[in-house]
Length: 281
Image 1 (tube, rainbow, N blue to C red):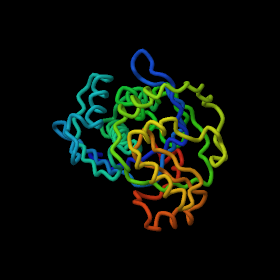
Image 2 (cartoon, one colour):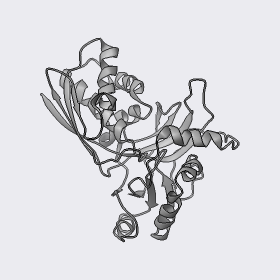
Image 3 (cartoon, helix red, strand yellow):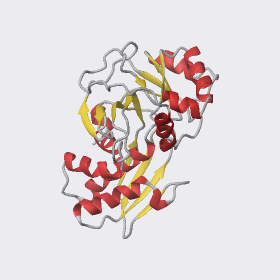
């Protein structure tokens, strides 16, 4: 086998609770991550005589796919020579995890193509060196994540969940949003334990995103976009990660697709959760 083509899915933070920054500068989180079957990047990985990463608009060595191969080389002490071609359908600075998903796809493909001596746990450890969301995309499905997002615990996939995803309402870099959250000087809530499953996402108090006020302060247009989703029938509206895309949550496919086709706001796609076997490795 010399070549693999993988779909790199987006994710939804159905819950995102943020703690104060640690000494290393990272904010501890408790977040419920759900891999989605929405618009996916296409990642083509092939054996090559030298390493290459092609993704329009992203310099080769700044791509997380390149960093994924760096991490594999560091962990195993062997050269990782692959050509990676990425067709982007998940926008940058959307909060949907496109770059992390691409990196996870490269890790899974590299293990298969190069017959690397890594089990699933080992691959997730390498993924954690690449980025906070990358271990989740290696595993997929629905997971509670703590720490920086790299400590995972499987969770039941919320039933009857459909998401209408918007493109980024505004370009929001993760660092800017967390800095704005820090400046808010609000009392730090105690994150809920990452133990119980979310069965009724419409009423569960854990569903929500602590970064919403910070993102809204940086990009007030998010407010109008959220109101448009609610007017279209969304039971809840969430900021995707640190932004700037939004997800309107619906309980059935017909209502979600009708809202997406209404023409009252831009739509990236309609998505539902992926089962674990399809969401990752």
